[in-house]
Image 1 (spheres, protein in one colour):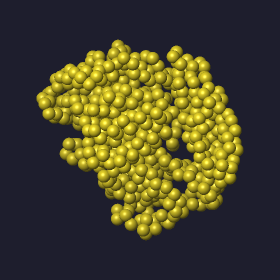
Image 2: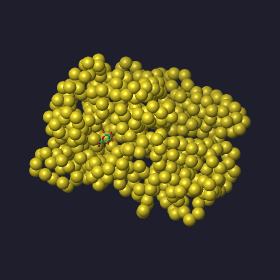
Image 3: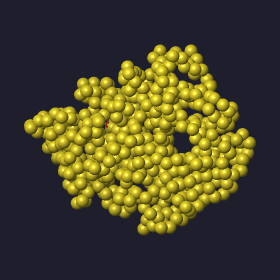
Image 4: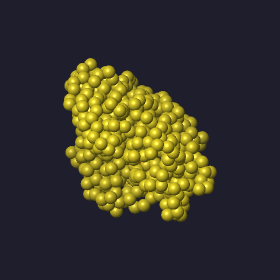
Length: 575
Ligand code: ADA
């Protein structure tokens, strides 16, 4: 299930989820031996899934081959893959048709002149790392491999719609919107075609005109600006969504959007003109049984738990989440932070100075903004997380990514999550300043390991903000927390790994950040425990990151109830 609604009523779509053949290729001999012409001695697996949950394959890293036979009426086909981890090579009937890098965004491949009948689709997923990988090998989540989100094949006819952004600008009183669409059109025929192209927003036609494209031509149409009155806003309490239907004589694309305004003004974050305090958690789209092939039913459960805790926002750490989850978030009224998997000190200086790596990150940002543009719940774009932002090379990257997100990312706040509060040189770009730091858990130079380190931090960081001229930008504590082993209790408040220590640390932090005027929000690390990479070594008991306020099966720890009490109170009293 790709979305919560049908994206097409005219275009014919065949779901390719379900049973596929699967074979590992640890010696990387498959292509030379012609596996793209048919897999032998393969087993049957269910797609979407990750292979690490198959018996004996938990730690398998490298090539995994998948094959599916399907039937088509023929013509121009568009194959869409929601997520292949991390690199995909794709063949149709033994002929290579495409390649994609990046685990967390969708990609598609168009093939013309396919004959009617049965065909074989082969995918080789590669989960291995090299010096240019995103993320790099050293990372604090599990490196799953496989086809983790849905696959489909569609038949394209005549002039078709590849993407559609609904761009809008709200009036001062937020009651009227100036809207236009950016429609990406493709002629699936090899000869010229003329067609009507229309865009409807709810019941209102905002564009309808004749378009003519030459054979296989690909264009983007920016439609004229229209004024829409009596806008019903997307708010946290009433997240009103509008359906956007783009259509031609032979094709369509359906999506949803919502009208809302997010802005930063005088040390404040405003949603639809109202000051908000971000009360959030970081969440990985991960479960020990399913890895990154996260079931839709459980997504709803996570959202219920997040809302029950009193949160009004989630950070999709550390990569674009599935579109269906974003549909649910749009409906929930939660605000969302979306980012790319540019994670941490895994990206050393060599990687950050490598133009290929930088370009890969930019390509990921481009895919994220293109695919997620219409989701109203996404109010924050995250450029990167905990790379060494004290370095000049990080400054250049940040500038490049910021410029792209500003130009292409719609009405969103742009930031990065920094663990360099005292020597970061990139914060000047950001609309809000976001800090990840773990006093009371990790030992930092100069820290005493006590919770009072936090109080000193708040004072010292304010000094730095003033020195740099950044004071006045809202500050968000984007990560802080402590590990707790579910079920381990201690009456002594200093015993690490106990549920009580985690609860008390979070209480200390939340109370301090809530009463600190220059701070405007918190994202606790983290919603629930996650399986992590063996590269984290003994730092991670059970090879899990245990800082969840729920365990990995979503059972609450003591901190859950404390967070719920505090977030509920903060929402009532305001900042
Ligand atoms: C970092 C990182 C998280 C997680 C966390 C931790 O801040 O961004 O992904 O690894 O540290 O638990 O140490």
